[in-house]
Image 1 (cartoon, rainbow, N blue to C red):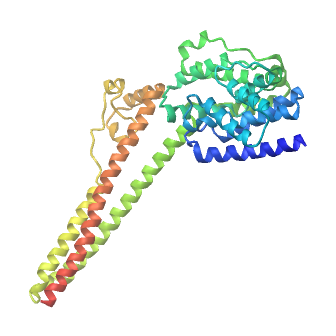
Image 2 (cartoon, rainbow, N blue to C red; image 1 turned 90 degrees about the vertical axis):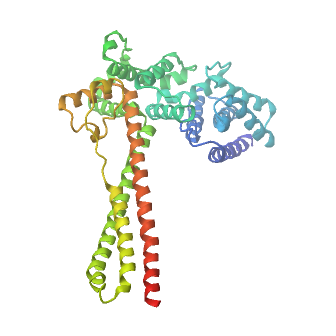
Image 3 (cartoon, one colour; image 1 turned 135 degrees about the horizontal axis):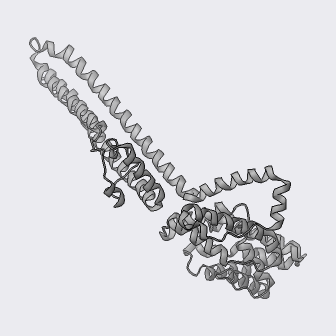
Length: 417
C-alpha cells in the first residue's frame, strides 16, 4: 500500500516540478532546468538501487532530486531555502510523514556547494547532482553552465579562464559513495585529461609543465581490444571539445543573429529594388505619354511635374538605402594591438597586404576576448547599417504612397476645375 502511495506521490511531484519550471523559472537557466532535475532523479535511483535501499528511502531521494533546484525561480542565491519551502508545502498538503519530510529537506540542503553530506541518503543525492561530471552529457552540460553564467550573471570568461575554472572544479570534486565512484569516476577522469589537453592547446608555453593524469589500466586494456571503437570515440571527443570552445548556446546565438542580419539586409535590398523599378516605370510612362501633351493640355503640367518629383524623391531614398559606404580598407598593426579594428568586415582590410592581414587574423584567433569582441562589434555595425537602410526605405515608401495619393488628387482637381 505504501509503495502505491509513493508512486502516486512521485508522479504528482514530477508533474508539479515540470509545471513550476515552465511557469516560474526563466529559460535563461539552461543548466538548472527541468532536464537537470530529471537527470538527478534518474541518478539517485541508479546509485540508490546499488545500496538496496527501501522504497521509502528511494522516494525521499527522488523527491529531493525533483525539488532541489526549484528555488531558482528567484535566482541562485539561497535557492536551497526556497526549494525546501516548496517541497515542505507540497508534502505537507499530501500528509507525508514529518520525519520523512525532514529527510527530504536535509537532502536538499546537502546539495549546497561545497557539499557536506552527513549520511548515506545525503551522499547519494550529492553524487547524483554531480553525476554529469562522469557522463557522456558532460560537455553539453559544461557548455550550458557557461552560457547560464554569461546570461544570468554577466560572467564573461576567456577560453583559458573557463578551462581553468572547470578544471579546478573537477579536481576539487570527489564522489562520496563507492557506487557513484564506480559508475562515474572513470569517465570523469577522462574528462579531466581532455581538459588538460585543451589547456595545453590554448597555452602551448605551459604545456610541458602540465601533469596530465595517466589513463587507468582498465582503459588501456580496452584500448588494445577495441581500437577502432576508441578511435571513433576520439573523433567524437574532438567534436565535443570544439563545442566547448565557444559553448553551444553562445555559438548558436552568434550564428542565428548573423543569419537574421543578413536576411533583413537582403529583404531591405529587395524592397529598394522594387521601389526603384516601380518609380522608373512611372517616370517612363509619364515622360513618354503626358509630357508631349503639355502644349495641347496645359492642365497636365502641374500634376505631371508633381508626380515626377514624387517618383524622383522616392528613387533617391531607395538608392540611398542600397548605397555602400566607402571605407579606407586599411588598418595598422597598432590598431590590432589596441583592438581598435574589426577584421571580420572586408571594408577594413581590402587595401591591406596579405601578410599584415594574416598576422592580424592570427592575433585575433589567439585572443578569445578579441575574437568575441570583434564578432560583437561586427553585429553592432551590421545593425547600424540595417537601421539606416530601413530608415531610408521608410521615407521612400512614405513619400511614394502619400505622394501618389496627392498626385491623383491634384490630377482630379485640375480636370474638374
